[in-house]
Length: 113
Image (cartoon, rainbow, N blue to C red; front, side):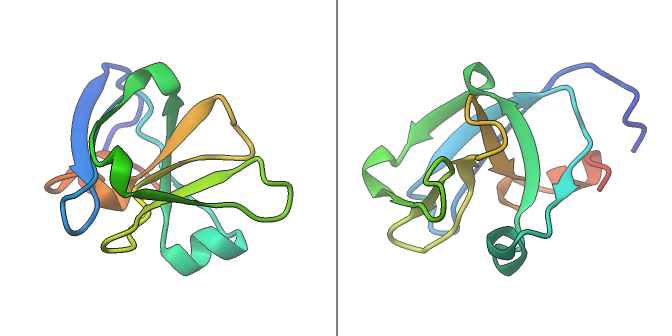
C-alpha cells in the first residue's frame, strides 16, 4: 500500500465473539508491530489514533481492564472471548491503540508494517 495517501478512512471492528464493536478513523496507514512483552504475546498490531477518532459502538459492559507496571496503559479486552481489540497505550495516554488484526474484512492490506 502507498502510505503517502493521507485521506482518512473509517473502519469497524471488534472482538472475536462480537460482543465488543467499535469504529475507528485514521489517515496514517503505518501500523506498528510492537515487540514489548504483552503486545508480542497478544500478536497486537497497532494503529494509534486520537480518542476523538474512536467510537465504542457496543460492549462497554463486556470490557475488562488489565494494568501492570506503571498502570498508565489500560489493556482492555472482551471478558467473554478474551480478545484485545483496543487499549489506552502508556506511550500515548490521550490516544487509543486499535489492534489492526481486529478490523473487519481484509483491512490489514491497507497498512504498512
